[in-house]
Length: 204
Image (tube, rainbow, N blue to C red; front, side, top):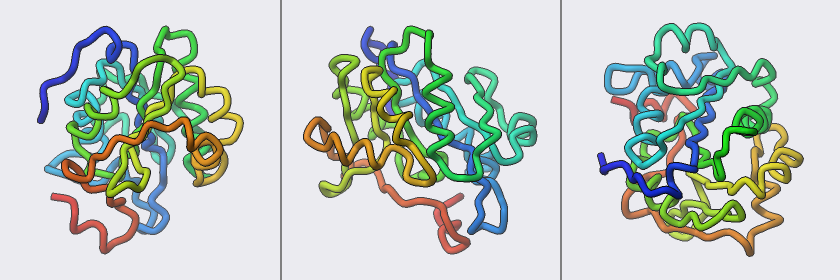
């Protein structure tokens, strides 16, 4: 993994990991609890954020949150409960952004628990494009927008107001496409999701 970045700007950016989903297409197995490299997948996702440069990490939990807390080593993270996780990631995104209010954090780098092909190099590249609380940065894969996505604090209210269902921040990003700085990460990461039984082949 890459060496974490420690510049003043990146210390003001929190990693926001959305890990609340119930794994409906995986027979009701929460993705946070899937095994990857011998440990719960949520642990791997947190390690990626830290290795990429996020000193502060907030993790949004939902499905079987108590079990995730028990089984996963997340002691250095801020754990955010989202009891309304079932409608989709929109509620988790809102809960995560709410948890950052008043912390002094100036941007949130949002990642998804079910994308283990995205490693710390992609995180570091997106972090490196941050310039101010007005920043809006997205990883791109062969020019197509993907995760992680960095939202400067100036965008949080707008994102929260439009985040619904499984679309997350898609509507907001579409409306502000001209403001997005795209950072190509296709050479250092693979943006597949763990959504179905067939996708489990990506886990080790």
